Length: 134
Image 1 (cartoon, rainbow, N blue to C red):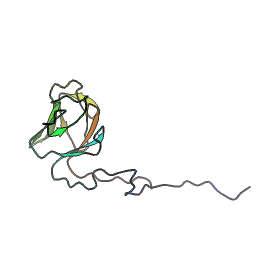
Image 2 (image 1 turned 135 degrees about the vertical axis):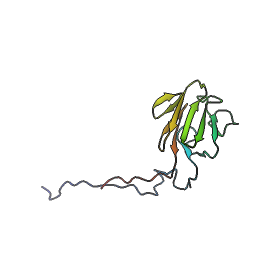
Image 3 (image 1 turned 90 degrees about the vertical axis):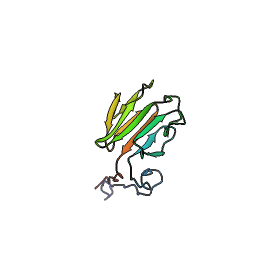
Image 4 (image 1 turned 180 degrees about the horizontal axis):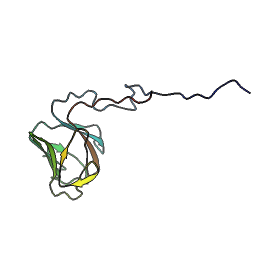
């Protein structure tokens, strides 16, 4: 018999660990942004500085998503005094906000937007890193 006892050890991932990149760490947010967290261009961040921002597969869009699952003119994002909304422009695969298909929907800090194979997160301010563990 050994005198060892079972114990639980907590492992905390270092903040600067390259396997868990903080995509927004170096970004200074003055305007809302959309960050791609899933899809062919993962890691790209787009600042929404204009009142209207177009999204689509056509390179003329402010947010160019280069994938066949995205319509040429897929959606537009409109910033108003009361908030930000996204409108689908009659796309083939639709625009999804927080898991629901929408024609038009408000965006809030942390909203997820799915366009084709892309998943984007809307940020109004610099997100805080959440510590886990003890």
